[in-house]
Length: 316
Length: 258
Image (cartoon, rainbow over all chains, first blue to last red; front, top):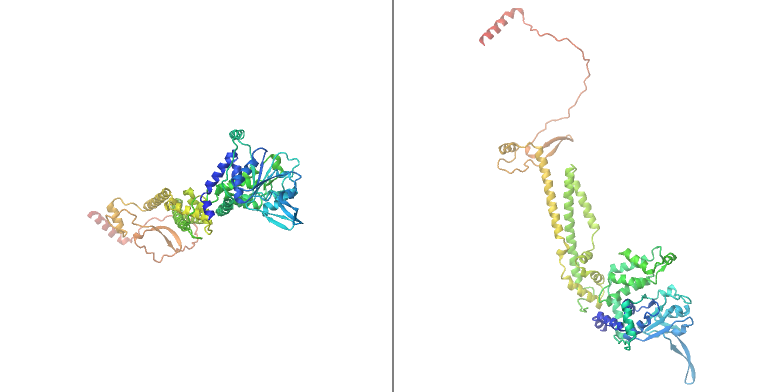
């Protein structure tokens, strides 16, 4: 069975993928790990960071390494839902005019929706069904999306003018919200060297689609102890308790996401069980976009991460 | 990672080992609890003895402690994880998912089974602590015995010599010469007459004391008579005159004989 074969070398495989990505991407190890985790969980990622930090580059290189189809949508205020999902076009066949469905960029394995908050709510919601149900409905017909289907949306934390912030319901559909930060001095030194020389950085295919699907199956098989599971539930429900800084807590999707991503993290790290360390590490990307802060918190400049850190400290 | 299959559904090898370890931990916990209870009992016995409170009351703290330990029993997995950090979380995850069967759980169970061989039951007992508690209980028992013995001896007049001691012992019905200087009198008992406690200590070796027809003494009220002064009467011998000469001669002769 492919699963047994894949399981035997899972840690090494992810080591090789990370190594291959490092050829093109310097630093951003946490971002890369979180992207791989989301891939294993069949979840979607919202990448937030300033322009020029390599968000698009990470995604396109990942698609190359995993030998997956990759498409990119540059979201703008005039983008239409049909620009994402596809549309019917009239075609002449044997003298007759017939409607033919022209698939949109959503029919891919990895979809990069760049600056998603610039798209109108109508266009944003066109992605909703695709993300949640992994299918597209046009008229009376439903088209299944090919597995794996992975949406990576980016947004810029600055320049909020003329944007349409994603509603909470749509934010909740993203498994992770990953923050892309500036590189360190040394990392930037390497970036400058790599991209100012003639040698173009090419990444190689490491994994095929079947292997990725097998890994997705294995992720769900990683066992979690009852105590660790209870810890997750305590953590998520703690966000719903009356607090000075939290207006609304995380949904049950956060509990599901936390357990699933912790399983994937354990697998990537070569562990065959979920530990609290995994939960603590995944609490930030899983919950930061699911917690709505109070006005008081925003006024005082308290971030979601600070609130999560506080809850984690309280739980011990 | 290994993918060797070590068991079938719900029958992983490590489950039996976990059960064995849990039962060993339970037995050791019972031993520890009882040892602690004994130390507590002896400690409170000593205090109550000094305070002249009934010693049987010392059982109460011991019982409370046993109940507390029974209610607040520690998780055996936690104890294993404390002593063997390599089992941290993995053992629980494997045990909680023992009913499931997939490649990851099989691998984890295999790893746990192999590592379980290194678990020694003795590691769950702090031998130094246990030895300390045993020594403490011996010490406390010795103090209690010493105090009890000293009190008993003080209550009985100590014989001057061994011969006297033997004589006293013999008189009281106990062993004679050559016997050890143990408390031959045994524990004193408090005599009760008509339900009233008397401050009379009777030793078993002192023989029997028969109390016959001892009845409560009844006192009757006596009327006070008036206290007056009466003149004292002078002593006079009432000897008839005709015998006066005979008596005189008798005493004179008596004086001469002397």
